[in-house]
Structures are given as C-alpha cells and as structure tokens.
Image (cartoon, rainbow over all chains, first blue to last red; front, side, top):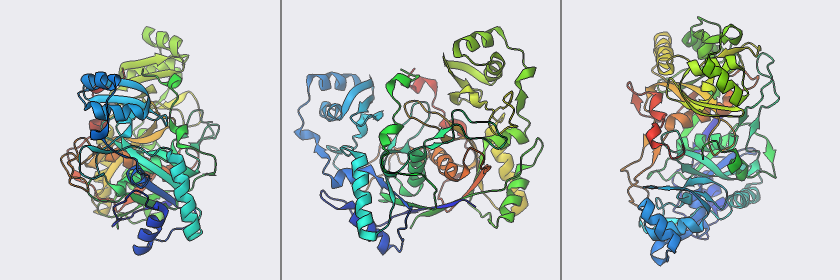
Amino acid sequence: MPRIEIIGLENFPIVKKGDDLAQLIVKVATENYVKIDDGDIIVVSSKIVSKSEGRIVDIRDVEPSKKALDIAEITGKDPRLVEVILRESTKVVKATKGHLIVSTKHGIVCANAGVDKSNVVGDPYIVALLPEDPDRSAERIRAGIKELTGKDVAVLITDTYGRPLREGHINMAVGLSGLEPFRDYRGKKDLFGYVLRIKRIALADEIASAAELVMGNGSEGVPVAIIKGLKYTRSEESSARELNMPEEKWLFR
Amino acid sequence: MPRIEIIGLENFPIVKKGDDLAQLIVKVATENYVKIDDGDIIVVSSKIVSKSEGRIVDIRDVEPSKKALDIAEITGKDPRLVEVILRESTKVVKATKGHLIVSTKHGIVCANAGVDKSNVVGDPYIVALLPEDPDRSAERIRAGIKELTGKDVAVLITDTYGRPLREGHINMAVGLSGLEPFRDYRGKKDLFGYVLRIKRIALADEIASAAELVMGNGSEGVPVAIIKGLKYTRSEESSARELNMPEEKWLFR
C-alpha cells in the first residue's frame, strides 16, 4: 500500500545570515524525535534559505532607475521595490495596476520576482530576494545533511506563487537536489494497455504543494517539512529550472 | 508536530457504470486495513467518477459540427473528439496546432475540457468526460461514506492538468465537498507581526497534488487516496468552482 508521511518541523529558530541550515534542520529534527532516513525528501521554505544567505535588502537604500520609476507608475508599487524586482529579473512579462509579472534570473515567471516582505523582520521596507542559485542552495543543504547524518536525502527549496487561471497561491519548487523533478509516464501503458502520450507529472511541484500542507505561511513558523516513504527517481543532475516552461511554448502571451 | 499521512488505495476494482463509489472505497479500505476516521480527506480520481456516472463516449458515434471541423483543422485533432470537447465547453480560449484550451461548463480552463482516453477501456475512440457536476459527485460519495461508516470525511474529485508557464502536469481539485478550498492568511500576521495582504493558499489544489504522489497515472490503478491528520476548515457550502479564476482577472489573455 503506497503510504507517505509529511512531518513539519515546528519550533524552528529564527534564521539569521550565515546560519548553517543543514545543521539547524538536523538539530530541530532530533529535538522533535524525527529521524532522518535515506530517501527522505527535505522541503525547505526559500525564505529561510534567503535569510541564511543574506539575500535581504532594505529598499530605503535603493536608488530606482528610470525604468523602475516608469513601472512603479504603471503598477502603483514603490519604485525602490520595483528596482529591486527588476535587478532580480531578466524580463518584464506583464505590468498592470497592482501586478508586476517578470521572468526571474532563474527563469521562473512569477509576481515581483519572488521578492517578499513577509516573515523577514516585520519591517515592510526590508524584503527577501529568492536565493541566488536555489539548486546550489539545495545541494549545499543536502551535502550538509549527508555529512551530519550519513543519510542520502533529496532537498527541495520552495516558494508560494499565484497562478494564471486559478485562484489562490500554491507552493512550488524553485530549487532541488537529488531527485528527478518529473515522473514521466510518456510511452507507458495505462490500466488497459493504452499508451500514454503526454502525461508527465511535475513531481517536484506536487511535493512542494504536499509539504506546504504542514508548513503554513502565517505565523506558524514551520519552514521545513520532511517527506517519508515517497518513491522517486534519484538524480545528481536535475535542476528546478526544468520546471520553467520556455517562452516559445507559452500558449498565453 | 504537524504530521499528515497519505495512503493510496491499491487493488481498486475496475469501475463500471452504476458502481457505488462510496461502497467501493469503504470496501477496498477495509480490505487493506485502512480505517476511515472523522476528518479524513478522501481524494478520488475524476476518471472513476466519470466511469461510475456513465460519462463515457464513443467518438465514432459523434457527428462533428461545422465549428468542430474548423477547430479540428486548426488543432490537428479528430473532429469528432473536438465536437465532444466543444459540447463540454462554454468557450474556446485558445486553439493552435496540437492545443485546444477551453473553459468547461464547470468553469475550468484546461486542455480538451478534460476529455481523456487514458484508463477508460484501452480503445482510443472511447473517451471519458469530466463528471457533470463534480461537487455534487463529491457530496454523494461523502454522504455514502457517512452512511456506511458513520464518519464525517471531506471528499475531493481531482484531475491532472498541464499549466501555463510551468512544465508538466499536476493534480488539481475539480469537485469537493466538506471543506473550504482555501486557507486564507489575509489579515493574519507573520512571524514578526507583519500583516499579510495577499496570501491565500489554494488548499484543495495542494491536497490534490499531495494525493497524486501516491495515486499515479499509469497502470498503477490507485484511483483513491486517503489523507489523515490534515487540519482544514469544514464547510458545507464550498465548491471547487471557487478555484477557477474569473476571466476578468486573467493577466494573460
């Protein structure tokens, strides 16, 4: 019987620049009697990764460019915040009243380049940027856990985003290490022998959403979840970038 | 420590028109020593709901309209299949080579109105339509489980869809009964007292994705998952339609 378990790590300390997340995760897991096993998937909120990596900006220190001022005018956003967003982006996809959708340096199309002020320090001028290279961050955490526990886990870095066409935010994978992001059914047969042509499940995004069920986004302070019992394909080469649809395939432009 | 468990119901029989899904779910759960408890969430693949409700069409019996012939020309799809899709739709959102995106009668924007030939009978001319009223289907299954076990569960009907901007399919909620589809953080405070303005998690879609981790879409034949331990807001009024973004809010058109 396929059975998986998702455990949220409560009582996680406030993360500061320079903190070793692998160490914190192992410590909090141990304190909470959660054993880390081979094959576990450790899901980490991008927010604490950003904080540990010092990816925090006080927008009062930022000088907006002409382009930022123009986009601030259109969107109604603070020009200094827009400037920060633009520096994290390769392209503005859509700017309308209240909305600034960009393609980030990582290739993620999302609102505000993932720049966010919640759960940073409670000061609306201080914002967190996404990790510089979330795959690399995941890899570092994974290596750290291996070193501390001897266990071979997979690590996902996740963030919540709005979606075109659907209401509400869901958690998605922005960085990963140790697992193949897709579960590919193409060419496989269904129950009745019909060969599936297109089904390829975005496993990493589904794992992110599953983890979010115990993580929460308010004041719960559960920035890490551990998933046990899930079968997945290990990989040393994969990247969360594979989940970003290349622009030439966009149907809505 | 927040902890949830997701169990896939293996060895599920092939569902036929007229089958009582509540009865089958309770039977298979019992056979597999899975106890159904108050508060459990039962996630059911739309495919078996469609089959139990007889929502199966042989496209060889379908006469394509002029509009279906035109769209078949553009998309390269079988005109009879296009006709079936159009009958399930209120609007064609996008038709290009290989792609037919519509808004379904339920208000879901997706490819092919969810009409699908996998896991039906292995005959590519025989397709399953989405349930006529998936909320109502969920409600019926929920009432049946209540009657058979005395337990108050929530029920989700789900289907896998592709997404704009992201690669791969994920499982989403198309019908629900007994739970509020969102977890609303708006107005709540974060860890540091900052009031969240926009965060509203599409809980039902995240639950669907979580369930899919054990359900699989190939020949595994795991059409039902049971989620235990998840805190959610009960509701007798909610609908999966709330997850559909109204067209006036679409940023990509």
